[in-house]
Image 1: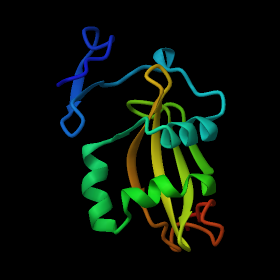
Image 2: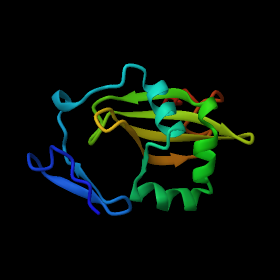
Image 3: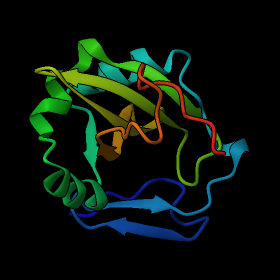
Length: 141
């Protein structure tokens, strides 16, 4: 069953077929509500199973050998790396997480109206792009 968001009639939309949710394309910054504490909001959504797994993430996790269970189990280790309040669809946040000694980054989109976090992508940070703390990008030469 397709869950239609209230803004669907006002703008162009796309459907995430894995969850049957309609997304508004090009949401403007005036329409956005940023979470007061993004890290707390994301952790709460994960703990309370208020997550949307995008089609993109399903394909990426398999290729990158990062399990959904690792993303869920690592909430206590989440650290905010970067914020993207003007990201294309929703305000997004890059999170560093650790699970069983392995580090990975997760990009979450935050939907404060529907009180959920969208898992957009996850990957293992490369030492070529990230400093040893895995939270600081290396400067391009």
